[in-house]
Image (cartoon, rainbow, N blue to C red; front, top):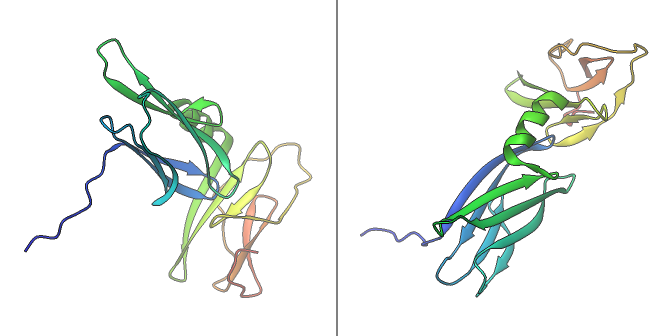
Length: 174
């Protein structure tokens, strides 16, 4: 006997990289029913039934920082629908290119655990596994960020002048 999987009208999927992690955005659009559903990380964020206008936009927020996202639904000259994701007022492609210039990301595997460290260059915020962590500002006018180097095999990390060091055997990146 075969298990029946729920039929959906998912027409677009994006993986959006933010400082707090990678978020999966799925858009379901029933072109005959007009239904629109937006999922972020598998959780339903928006559901609209019986939309008579097939084109338009859906606005929602992603991640811990509540980053604004918009899915634009457009029709071209052949009545083929296009779905364009906009993040922080930029097309998805421009957002990805800009993000590579404005952040540095490191993934560390220590003591069987993975740590994702993100430095936001414009705000100097440091994120570890989805949370902003306290960091010590540098006295230098500019710095070149290198991959963090933990100093021992215990605990968590403290960002100090561009380096990552472990402190007090704690387990939550502080």
